[in-house]
Length: 480
Image (cartoon, rainbow, N blue to C red; front, side):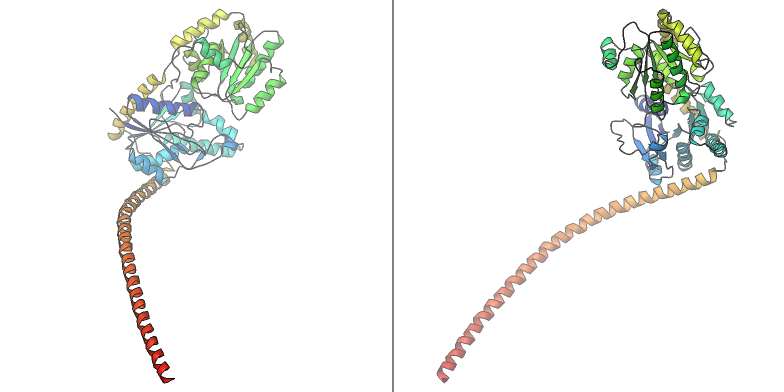
């Protein structure tokens, strides 16, 4: 059955990150294969949403990109409520537990539809990075958990993400709903690889390692750089490529220079073209992802699509479903362990190839399949909500958000009435202007007629005056 699904997130292109990419692929696959998708996201200066097969509704925001890399959405927008109502939305699916979920809770009160939240990221790390005060960190975490708890169903992208959510104080149920990848299974051809990598010194026969993602220290980038420095010091030949950018990008590049890795370590910056990304995955011999921050690690499966194996930290979320030495490689969370693993694998390229092929056949999950699973669950959630199986949420903010939602609904109604009045007035105005134009022509004709009569009168009076003057002159002439 076709349903109208509203997807909300604090980021969306041109803002690029893993969750933004997830929302794009949810919307794309829902619209193409299942129902109707609507994306609701904060406005971004200069953003254009042309070319999407589904509507993108932007709500007001403050441009805080220089401060935190993202815009800050203002989730109290009557215009947004009105536009979402027009799309006849049957389920709200938020992908960020902050501003987007506040807006989703308001919209739930307006639309009376279920609200699903997917927890993608370990937000405690983001909160700690953005807020230095321990007291304020605690308050922000409590607000986040309350926001999550107010939703009707919680999805997580991995078991580790669910455990992280519980560690923040969340006590409810959750369900694993894995994300997919938006690259097809299989690498690209030699020409595409050459086009993607042509500007870099990548000798044939020298192992090439790859990282794709935001350049943030908490993704294990220091572990990678220190391990590479150890490899170079012992004389092991290699090349390393970092694709992406982020708040720590400048510091990461400076550290690479300090470690004298300039000649073997390259930074491409962010790349949005997926075929170019596929070219890099195909060229790489090994993908390095020693992150314990990421809750899913889509890049691990993107690499697997091109038969490239990943080195990851044992026990991390990215390592879920992976078997060491079979479809991936495990290390401890330190540079020495990574250096030892890379040294061994550089000496055994067949192991990298074999494990990469296994990763391709065993780890790959397309977005088409991932969204199909999610859509099946949407239908269950919609039926359960309509049957009254979800409890009414009574969180401290619910009263305010309910009032806010009702206010937004009222404003939306007023906007609708205003538009109707404007339309009626426009029609009346057009009729009035037509009548005025017609009357104006009649008035001009009247004036022309009056003008001519006055002219005739003046000419007649002039003739009579000349006659009287002539008569007076004759009389004066006789008198004199």
